[in-house]
Length: 184
Image (cartoon, one colour):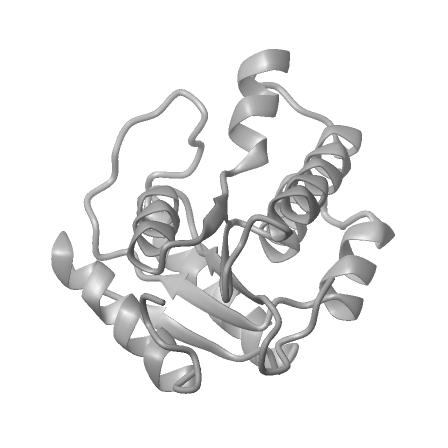
């Protein structure tokens, strides 16, 4: 994938626990910056194959997410917003099975995104048959935060309700990448 060097596509991961507005934020950021975004592959996969999953399924989901990201990269202008990324599947796998497939860890460390927007848990939980942990959002949020710090990945926490959440994300991106004009 292209690096974050000036003039190439900057990959921004929208990450965090379930029901924190990742999909809506990724789509809204892509709209604001007139660029492409990569929807969450896990949702389509689980809707097609059923809500039960194995370790193999999690790796297939991670690979499918990465493939979708590669496919959308050529459609992006300045930024590519990614609704989830290998950190999500790492935490998911470790929680569900006690460990993570090596490919996911390798992909996370060898090919990290340029910037991570960690969505705060300040949005109300929305019931969804594919969501599993309504009472553990604080626990998972702290796992994401600790992992991002341990991996020394650049991130910011995005909070706020409605339009405020989007505006906070836009401001964070503009501060991190001032050389990119916001809407050109």
